Image (cartoon, rainbow, N blue to C red; front, side, top):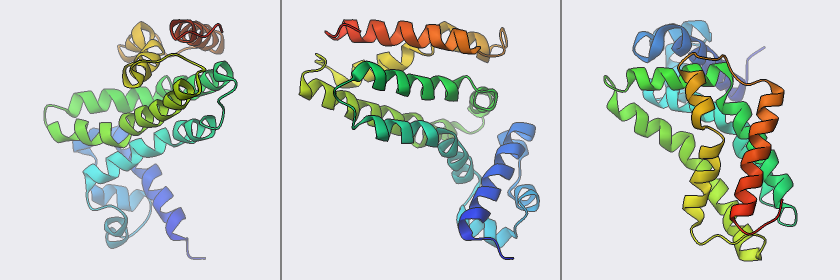
Length: 202
């Protein structure tokens, strides 16, 4: 049975992610990714123009669940504490996952040889997340649920609180990740501090 275009694209993305993690950005070839998918090279290039676009699509796929969570949370104005905890859970689950940590290390290691890669990845993953979070926080501010003079800064601070020292330690290999209790403690502290700092008693 012939696979649908969507299933072919998903197979390509999964093969690409495995190749990038195993061989690095420079070591993974479009030919080997096509073979692993498996699809023909013309099919691969019909979905992705080149390796940089394919790598960006892998990053976008990693962020998809978080972006969907943000989209759903925008409907929740009356209970910002619950919505922010849901967003924080999705963000923490993403950034502390083993594959995400390895992809982050890969981007940093390849930056010197492929300086344009970092910008492309940022526009594909972190930037849409930040924009969508900012849109939700702007709605909270407009509704009076939170007092937020600078939504963009507040958005960055919220995500930064969920990373910080813990994420750096994981990237450096000092710890493998966060267990569920550690995630809950981090999320509770970050959300509580964020809400209190913006005029809301959590």
